[in-house]
Image 1 (cartoon, rainbow, N blue to C red):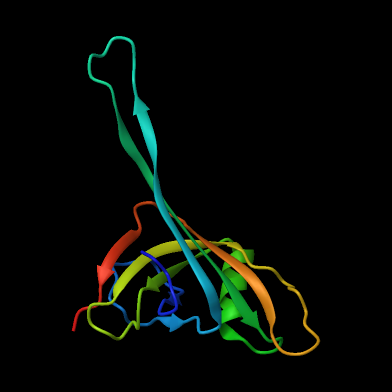
Image 2 (image 1 turned 45 degrees about the vertical axis):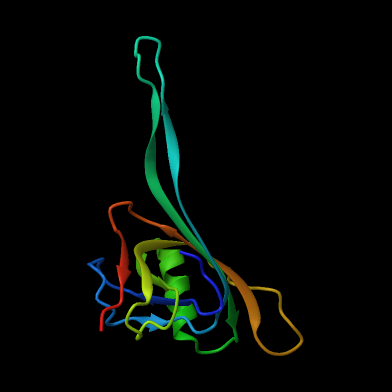
Length: 149
């Protein structure tokens, strides 16, 4: 899925389940969302086999974005930071459009917060830009979905 200007990022703190689009919180301060979704290749060659080939390895996903954090009360940053420091998982939905719109494609997965800095580049005023990275926590807990009407 290509993330672009229309991309949205949502999360929930709950046990992973199939995507239903409810109980999600949008990460509205996420900018420059980048999604990497790939599989490694396994080369299957040996000296005794006539047939050689390749197969696909396990799927890996990571999502990187800049979070514009203004010090003070910020429930989204607090949830991300808590998942990072506690090494717990969150469920993440990356969309290619507005989540409430039928036909929007969704990448839904259980994630670990791989980086969530305590401090960022502090401007003279306004929000800090914090680079956040989410990674797939369990290859069994990932789903490509489409929002239905």
